[in-house]
Image (cartoon, rainbow, N blue to C red):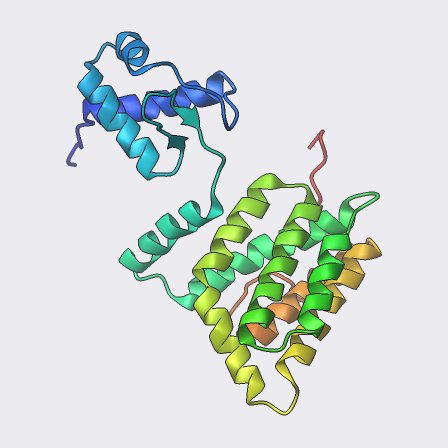
Length: 248
């Protein structure tokens, strides 16, 4: 087996990321200077600058001429851009992406339904926008807005970030799906509103099995014929769903 040797710049990149995490540096917090990092990691300033360039390219830090380098707020667009590139390189299909999305979105809906005193106002605004959409772009934007709002209600920040990134990756596919709906007997906005309204109603009422069922039906409408596995299967619908607690 071939062993890939890590470069000094890669080492400093990883160590700087560890530094950000272990010291709890929040977005906007300043990193140590290039000289301080060079001393800390036992490398030259040239190596540190190369590592900083890598982190900047990944959208993780902001370098400003003559000022401190600071931690950047996570940018879903940066994440989705990197993800889109990797998916294309690996030849990942839309079906595979939809299967991945289904797992995340179902978990998002179930967690949201389990949240006490949940605030679904942003979801309702997205539903209204969907109902009033006058074209494909407006319909797609309202769709994305709804799913991100749902993920926010779930309280799981990792889910929200990943769902937002995946929606950016499949935006073209959403346009194609709605274009097909426009050619059907029922208006696209009506179909989209109906499936999303079912999800919203289940979440708002705290009905976990209904949320699971509604999300599964939503994906069946979006891309029928895809094997979504146990996600929303008849064996799970109507049964209790595991929701992690702080003691799980």
